Image (cartoon, rainbow, N blue to C red; front, side, top):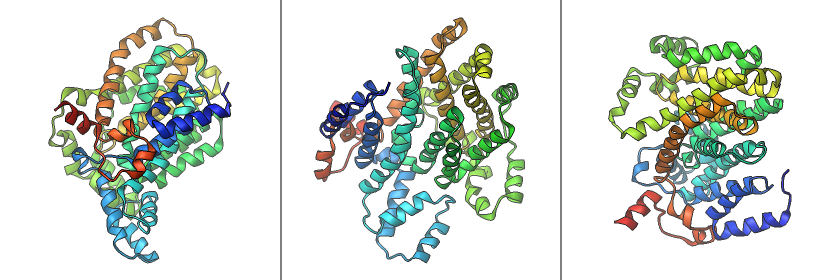
Length: 419
């Protein structure tokens, strides 16, 4: 039952003004409260306000976005200028362009830009986290905590440095879960609007409407999912021919860099970089853990799913989408579709593992998967240190309003403290 005690919400808001990070910890501890998700939303907005762009962020999307805002602020822009700016941006979607054009009339501040990103991203992120938390029954199991931490870290709050893609991802899931699990048709509309945030979501949205047309075909989707575990390579020549022959001109032009032979070769060679072993395998560890869970759920929970339509909806679409995402993962930047598949699959797995009794096979698989999940969590948090500012953890909004210096990342902060 949701706690509707108004005073606890006021206390949480006061704590947020003093120490936001502790307020977020309190929100998760009191996850059945009515205010918890809003505290998380406020924290992500605060995180955007104190966002740190360190040396490691050079070349990332956020640097380009900040530079674009500064350039726009320095010139006068008419409506037609705005249209030309969109045409020259290299993007099909429009949300980021609209944000740029509106904010640039008032400011060129990176702080304000990332604050707005935090507000938008934080809304969808916080609602997705609480959608799962509000549906957990009974005493929380240790494996649920582990899986939910992975759910939190698959597309974490520091991913606002690539605002378009990952905001679209959480927006898609925000609409998708209520549609599948509760039958809310408006959810499909909301999920479809993710295309306005990032054009590549034409793929997930197409899968959604294919599912709506085909309906639940659990055995078929599971078979397709199994096939893609071993055969998931797209022939780039055929793929490019389809795009060039049937896609609109604007799509051809703005996806060319993703489909070029040089991009494919660069991806195969790892972009010229050889990251340390844990950076190479932490994502693989999560993916294979999730795939293992999905196989166990099908083999041991098939009767339950077929008898419960809302669970069947979620499981069927997850298997279908995971298979499609596996195919697209072979093209440059296509692995991002697998990230969305992981987020969706974890939502299903968390609800099932927490709310259902564990039989022997599931118990044994949980033991086997735990080290892999822990590897993912540790490495994902380590990556977050590069853009999570020290002020996001140690500061508060009052101090941030009067702070005139640059924000440094936790990674740089730890280095300064230790060295």
